[in-house]
Structures are given as structure tokens and as C-alpha cells.
Picture: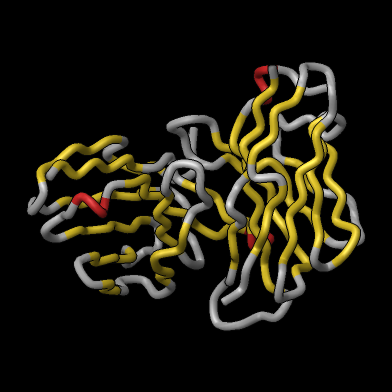
Length: 110
Length: 118
């Protein structure tokens, strides 16, 4: 059982559609991060959320940290084929160890 | 920005041999490095936490005698897969945490190393 549960695990949509990825836990995290990973490469940090209720925007991506700091969401507006990839949420726990969710594999079809 | 480099990026070895993967922080000192394993279409699973000058802390289920980790300096950690078997074939990724505490936690990931055991 993973500490961070991501949903959906896989998402295939058409270009221009909107989507939301969820990251949930029963544990409280000091901060949560979202990464995007391409096949055969290391994950690339998209954002870090620290404060409960915080909302951050990165172009068409909107990230939200739950009020209780147990969950987070990633919303993509007007998805493009270039958004295709594996999206990972990760939370910091004791000892500054970063634990990852199961990942959401997104495919955006042109 | 900070860079973490892994070497080799791809390696193929014969079953029963040992393979060493290096993780270097190129422009900062990393007191702590982390090693992850990622199987195809799965997420990253933390294997161990490596602290400079001390023994690594392994996650439950990870064999410390099989996955030897050495963090001899503030810029280098190595992972040696001993007596490798085909089931050890995976994508291994390291990350490094800066030694200076800023606002929030700053961790940088390497590019990953593909290991194929034949």
C-alpha cells in the first residue's frame, strides 16, 4: 500500500480537453511536490506546495494543496500532446525522504 | 541550476556479475543522496538513503548486501548491484539534497541509469 495514492492511474484524452489528477493520503505532509517524467529520464520538478489551501499556477497547470495538507490536485487546462508523460506527486516525510505516489500516465492525442 | 549526474546511463551485464552506478552532484555538496528503483510503467520506489560518511539506511524489503551503497564524499554516492540477476533489471535513479537549508526542501534528480541483466 502506497502512502500516496494517485488517481487515475492512466488517462487518455483528446487535445483541448481538461483533466484533473488527484493525490491523496491519510498522512500529513510538510510539503508536496509534483513531477513530470519522460520515459528513460529522471523526474523533473513542476511545483512545490507548502501551505494548506495553497494554489499555484504554471501556465495551463494549476496545483492545489489541501487545507489539511493530506492531499493535492493537478489540473491541466486545454491539454496538448506535449503534456503527455508520467505525472508523479511526492511528499516529504521524516528525514527529508521523498516518497512518491503511484503516478498517473497521461496521453494526449492530437 | 543544480545538476546531478548519473553514470552510466545504460549498462548491460551478465547474470552473476556486479555493476556500479555513480551519482554525482556537480555544482553543490550533497550531504544526503537517495536511490530509487523504477520498473516499467511504475512509480519510483525509494531503496535507500545515503548519508555522507555513514552507513546507508535501507527501506524495508531492500537487501543491503545486494545493493551496496557508498557515500564517500559530499559529491559522490555509488550503488553497486552485486550478483545481478535478470529480475534486477530496472531504471535506477538517484537524487541529492543540498546541504544548505533554504525555504522548503530542495532535491535534485539524476537522469537515471538503465540496468539490463542478461
